[in-house]
Image (cartoon, rainbow over all chains, first blue to last red; front, side, top):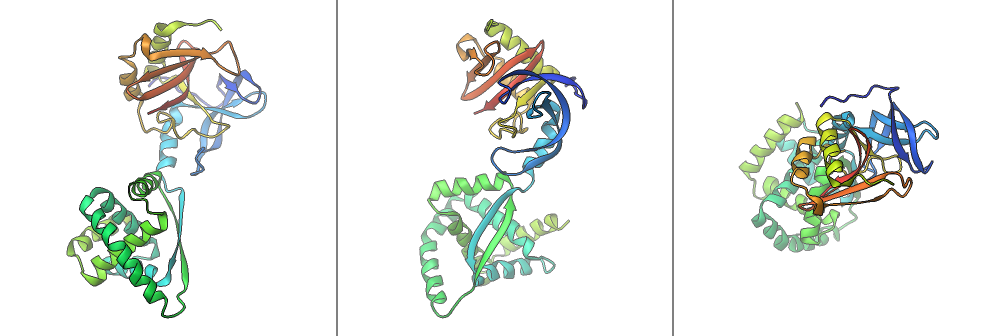
Length: 209
Length: 99
């Protein structure tokens, strides 16, 4: 690559506000992604000399766009019951005693990845989930159970993974997370899985580095 | 609009990709996330590989709706869609690069 623009350099672009080809000047601006997933801070853009609109981004800004795009930016919010969050936190504590509730996200991401990669696991989950939900309903019917909102930001990659699983299974986002809770309970409380523990300890070591 | 034809459009596109003299049109001031070259999901080299086998039948063009002097080119190949216009020699503005 040889072309490199500096702030103040001139160029041209079509301006939809001015409705035509206009002269532009390169300047640093914050620019949002059009899918609402966040923005790129202080990136070089081509700005309309007439109306000050951001019109274009030069090739050299792609690395900054890529970095911003890869960072967690898409909100994931699901409403669960308190025991479901406690299952996640119990597993997180067993994986790494220094883990805080921040480890819920990597834990969920790990199981979503496994569901996507392992067709047998997905089929087992399809079969077991309705039974699990009936059990949970009867537990929740015993007394008043507080609701908890699980809320964090995920990368476009994790969002795409969830959408793929949703399209494959017809499950809503909340059901997907509940399936993860079901699998976590199985692997860490009901039928402890040394494999899952080992995998997730490695994840924790990276995440907490 | 004076049309430049497929061969010239391809030559200028290749030269712009090789030299890095290209930019990506924003979508109402925001980054078009479907533009995979803009977001770094594909590289300029990968787009060059896509463009290399393009022939006349992969190309169409029409006047830009905001400025009829600007010819907007579309290359469609192997499920890919590359939409751009030429600003200079070489200097290209991508509207989208997606599959």
